Length: 135
Image (cartoon, rainbow, N blue to C red; front, side, top):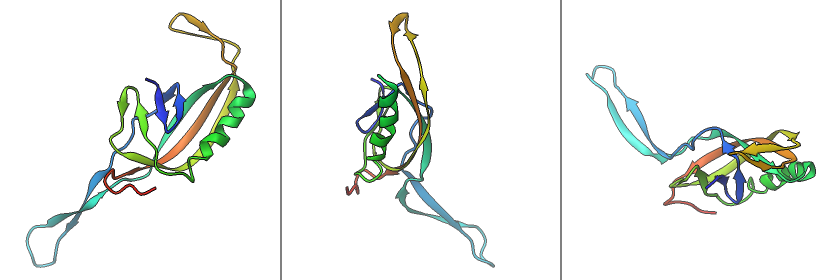
């Protein structure tokens, strides 16, 4: 299975997804030996991931970024990295077009495939706790 963010498939994502993690607060008081720490809840931190997609035409490549932007105002999406489906959902905070490059032809695994556009984008995603997802 290809890398995917929501309904969009990519040749690759340049980093694995971050996960929701427990947040710890460490505190100490003057005159009291030692420190204390407590769990302030599980939440995610925004992170950035780059994507590389293939489109049939250069114009399709330029349109793809507009399609990606629809996820910014939408509900949280599922993310696939390789064959792994992320356990939680992700809110798309931002999508930035890095470039659309024309490609005349390419070989993948020895098979000739003709592409005419590669789309490079940078996504800012926020992992959402799967038990409190509200679209």
